[in-house]
Image (cartoon, rainbow, N blue to C red; front, side, top):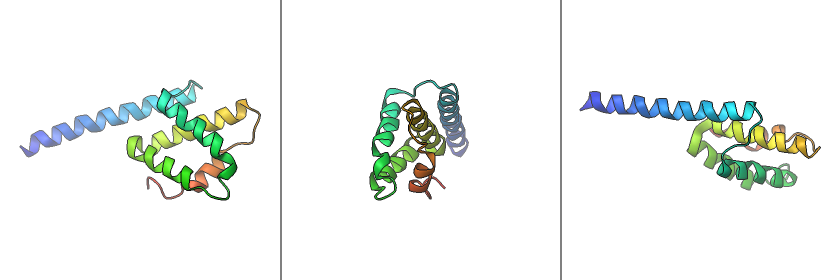
Length: 106
């Protein structure tokens, strides 16, 4: 019984890691994320004006992403949001997001 649970846990861990690697590869190639996460990146860009003053919405988004896919998903969405900012000739958003998400996923 214990051995079977251990095997199931290992399989689930491999699947989660494979999904995370796929998301990171998509971002590195500049490809859009899956639609739900692409919307999260768009939301980060929309909230960029409130990042320095009140970052509760941004923090809530980070916590949800961490619960769904861990730190790698958070990084993938933040990188995509930064890419969207650069395409719009706006200033980088990464530092502000890093500040708002500090302590999530550690």
